[in-house]
Length: 399
Length: 169
Image (cartoon, rainbow over all chains, first blue to last red; front, side, top):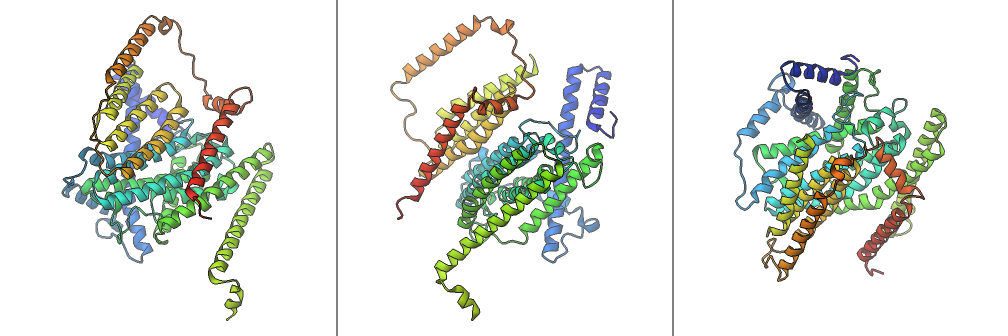
């Protein structure tokens, strides 16, 4: 064991040695070292969050054919610090009729529900908060706290726009939780474990994206809805409910919601990387052996999928809430359950087969499944069009 | 006191305090939020017992689904969120007597039990989650109750869909 393969354990032992050398009891030294580790992880996440603001603004500018922040520092990289100072010195307004305690608790809970996700995110084979044997479910539980924070914010603001925004957002979140849980079950079945570390290790040879590309896409769609980002960003709508559930929040309280949203998007990108794209395995080799390469791989994948989420957000317009719920309940949920069943059965049948046979069959199954779904959708669309426009639409097309 | 005992006492205090607030606050949404705090305390207790699966499921099911449902129901059905009526019904003293008696007898029974010092808790197996999963689908364990519960939930789902569709045709 050396620093390059297991930096956390080496640092912990060094710290415990240092603290006991100062005359602290061994137990206390251990607790202190673990506390320092937790603080380091959270600080890392929060500092990353500050730069995510810059990335978000820079990328959206490029998508909209602008330059974005470019005045403070090279490429405007210090812009987020100006943003933070602005947010901190702004007047902090609490509406007179608001429920003060709940109103102030909601933004904290919102950011906390994202930060606690980092506890189970395996950054490398030896660098992780905790290797929970129920980490996949923990992801869902943290999402439940996020839902709670939104409904608290919407209700405590005592504002109709806020309440409508919160209702919409919560309706979307609890609906899209179902396909998300089903999508999470796919890597669970493939790896045979609920632990994030185990799922990453199971992808040493083949990424789960190769075995189940549809599962990855399903997770991405459900994650975007869970994040409340466009095209599912019903929580806000400038022309109808303005800023939605955080309409009454000012200054740093709004900042916490905003920071939580950005960090949430990045964290889900990283989880998509861990669950389907090998975690610390690849694109750089030896990610499972050397911790720093592993961390680089996970963060790089997280950034890439964060960019994909932004790409979707700034390209696709917002969809109506009834369309969104119909899309979830009539398409995504049945498709997810069917995919889960087919994946489980085929995985069981191919148990013990050669790796390449397994991969080829799984991939073929995904292609056939995707093609079937598209065909069913096409037949449905044709039927709807015929009932709306009358039977002979091919003849009309000739004119 | 070991760290575990400190965490247990803190959690138990928070859970009981929130539970008292659930029934004593006049604001119905606050009652639902205090209930969430109680349920979260129960989840922490499960985690202390190393029942990680049950702890997480407690949060997912009770906080993520049931408590959110409570809040929705309260917000959508009431014009005034505050509860104006009396907080006690005429039989409150009998309930108080029964609770005190049950608590006293529990204290007496548990303080006379020698198991605290002699029986050490069996170690939690490393793969407790795997054992739980296998027990749920194994014929000589819990497959029948598991399936019965599944059928019950399925029938509830079908019933909900039937009610929602109504008599359109």
